[in-house]
Length: 82
Image (cartoon, rainbow, N blue to C red; front, side, top):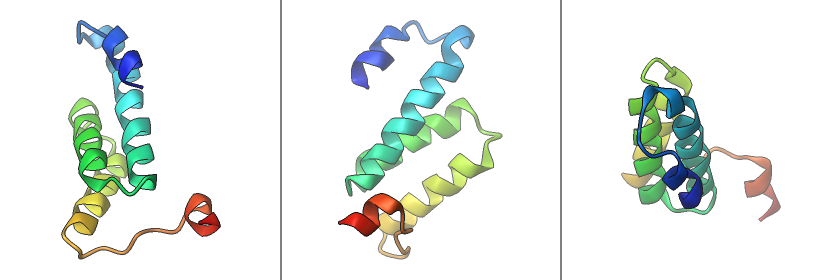
């Protein structure tokens, strides 16, 4: 995904949606890999790119709560297989 983000330079309005999607997908992947620090970083970037998307903001809050040991990890099909 890093290569995809590098292709979206310069950061302009015309590629905002693609940059948002890249950060969101990578943030979710980091969360699934139990890498909350990295997930938080990408989800923060996604929220900055599209602040009106409350669903992504909620995901960020969940990851931040997990990092502080306050949240419960939501179960997804990937988590149930492990």
